Image (tube, rainbow, N blue to C red):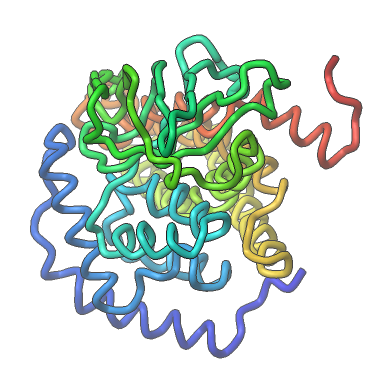
Length: 377
């Protein structure tokens, strides 16, 4: 795989850096983490600025390499992340771009890129645990609509979303992986109840969603009926393959800040801590190279990340937890201060071995699809 950048790609990087240098100083202060309407307005205003500057298309119409450069440079510059619309920009949008009809692409992609509409993810269920294919939310075809009944949990940003990428069971008699359908559900449809969930850090970016005979137009089905598991694998390949790129850059920056803090507060004298910081530096350098390899592979295979994303997700989840455990060592007693950014990041890092597919699920994927080991019976 070619991990180098072309002259054209480096020129794109230079233009983007210049634009970020001019655009970022004019941004208003970021809203409180608990002000979700304010955060939605802030995030969508930034997305509109990207759209008007010609940079919004990087999430699916640009090459994987250009997408990588965009995420790397915006993170380095401290630009706002995709925020409240990460599901639309990093999961649902790329899936619709890859699997949707011409009409669906026309309806949903531009509003996502302009920041006009926010999406949430309705995959996980209270009784399914790590086995996503065990979902029970039922959808029955009734004329030109599906009637959906069930519930979802850990639904990201449901409280401010306009649309939901929703997995439903349309054939309860079929094997569990073959009776699933991928729908785009309007969040203002009658019969939807959203109840925010408070995380360990006190935030409410997740919610429970209860669906009581919600009617979803059949035209909102992405892919064929009962072929939703295959479409879901496309969604998850983006979630595990490229959605964490900016976070790797952020972790490398945090690691450098940790070393500087340790030198200032005397923790640098601890040889064990220095070795740990050095090992983490090597870890995140390797993860960045793996990211480049995955993007290069996606470039060669049509733009959809492959199973290498599971290798990345598995190691990154644990490396991030180790990074913020090390941050607690550097901070000492200050690690208990919830107003410290690293403290909140440490709490959020605990979820990474669960979110976007648990580490156990990633190990199964690596074992079966990469190493060729037999499937569990």
